[in-house]
Image 1 (cartoon, rainbow, N blue to C red):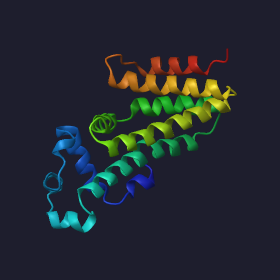
Image 2: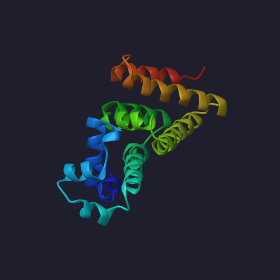
Image 3: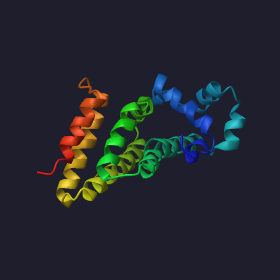
Image 4: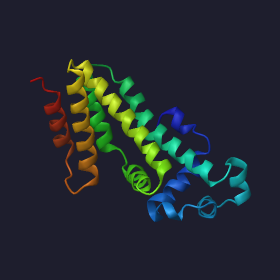
Length: 180
């Protein structure tokens, strides 16, 4: 795990809320439930957070850092072409734990702030894909369209019954990287 995520403020408290989100859904998140999960008092919570809304923003910030910026850092460490970077990203994402993503996406259906955070994540991820396709010398329009196809198919193969193996995902990615 990248250092920025490991050193994220109050990470254990945030992970407790994400666990509640996974197991019970957004409506179950309260100061009381978080404190019970942490085996701490509400006074401990109040020292760290300025109310539940502040806490929930921290959860969203942590998720953005962990599930988006951390992957960008991994890609920056990959030496090689845009094609190799993209294939590495497909593999890293295939092997990633999907629980947080699904829980946040479900939360975003019910909460405008989570929806805004999800939009930021989706836009950042799309921008990375667009940039990689540009590096492969696709036009601006083709880069945008190919990144959208790759991103939405990646989500679709994870969160629908149309699942794909890593080999199938790599094959789809290679097809999108072909120059016509």
